[in-house]
Image (cartoon, rainbow, N blue to C red; front, side, top):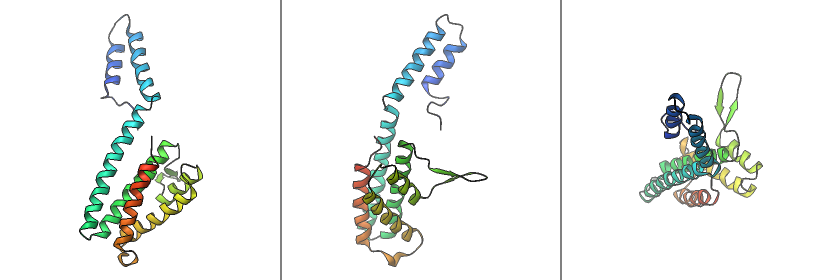
Length: 173
């Protein structure tokens, strides 16, 4: 993924200034590039992404809470597990951990349990957190594969509470 695409104002401005025959085109372009560099160095992009992700996660967790209140433990468990897995992926990105495995023919996304192990190994969070995340991922897998009798609504509610706390505590920022 590129940080600044063709439709970003920085890209458009540099492109316009370099093509046009202005005497100070290089200085102007350099100033725009410095502004972009400062934005990235200051963590603005990552902070914004983290805030947007947190808002989306909160929305999904709120939907899961509603589903639980209505007695729908199975879709709630899958939804909460999706939030958890995406948070693990974003933590990997933020900490320079690969989220894909190179095979002979293509890139394959790592499974959530591998991401969890990699994050604990990199000491992004503790081994205790790793074990708790493993239990949540197991519950999510049971829900996703129709093993509905192997967990209770109370366990899904505890998972929701725990994932909410985990996402807030182990942040991208």
